[in-house]
Image (tube, rainbow, N blue to C red; front, side, top):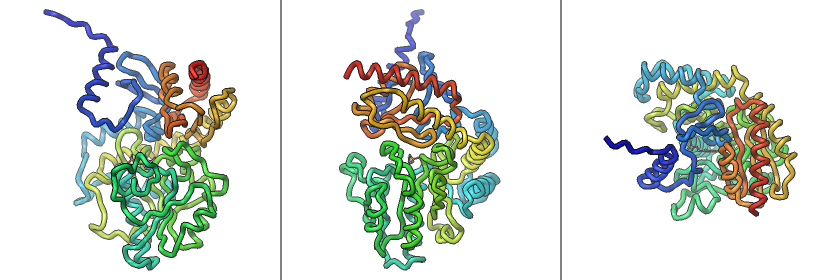
Length: 410
Ligand SMILES: *Cc1c(COP(=O)(O)O)cnc(C)c1O
């Protein structure tokens, strides 16, 4: 019998080639093929270990394979996975109660992907505009911000100012008004009597970790109240502890009319998203007005319930605040002519460079750190919130080495 020896390196190359052959080419991943993960660590098919600073864009706040969330998933998978909302299941009500209690809102509408929760909030806001505010039918406007990211559906890209997200996907959905992010005077001018809502990321994540000026969120909230406009906060990426508060809006004690949650709500195991709002607002949806086959399924509900329990009991927001302060301070202290700015809050950190961030990202990868560029010149550092001090310090030293390597080739 002929045995052909295939090295592990061949396995990585084969996986990448197979994906390129059969997959759509709508991503450009870093060249690492992951086969196992735990906590903040990844292992590739060659057995090399990496620190995960992508955290699936904040979907892995709890870390990989959290034992309690994994146990819930396995236990629930053996009992009941899906019913549809044509009937009740025993898990959904517990999840709804837990998320309402966590956020301090009265009503929850569960979906799956983040963008579906965004879509849900947009529909809710338009309906409120007509039925509560009295905007003439089919003329409601929603103010969105330049450089935002709310997902990839036609509605979300209609609300986007980023050329690549929109190019050749028109015609677009009308009713979005663009305002510059961080400028309260410009927002005042953008709001008209036809405005039903302002859709805001409290920190722009995909846009390059853009933190608005101190006081901006509170000013937006009071402007919305004054002008009888709903504030919809897209906390899909910033929520659930990422920025050192439970929600990034908490930093300025802002309570949006609707909170859009996703990513980490699924505990790294399952896509779960939701919109939370007051009972009065949510009751603008009646039976059949909105829905989703998989939204609120018992497996999702069970996993998300445990994800919330872990978030609270393991004080993940507090840990993100501490680890983030340590990491940001150390990153700011690394001397380099290539770094323009280190910014962020908690463990959502952006490093703006004067060279393409992809180069630093590749230098980090060869030193065992996976971190991705976001917006050309910004490297995002967003490890799971369970990262410890020793690992933060290790990350900084590998970052420093990688920066030196980039400097030497530029
Ligand atoms: C990721 C993201 C979304 C979209 O979430 P998906 O689960 O990818 O649909 C929406 N809003 C923000 C702010 C995000 O970061």
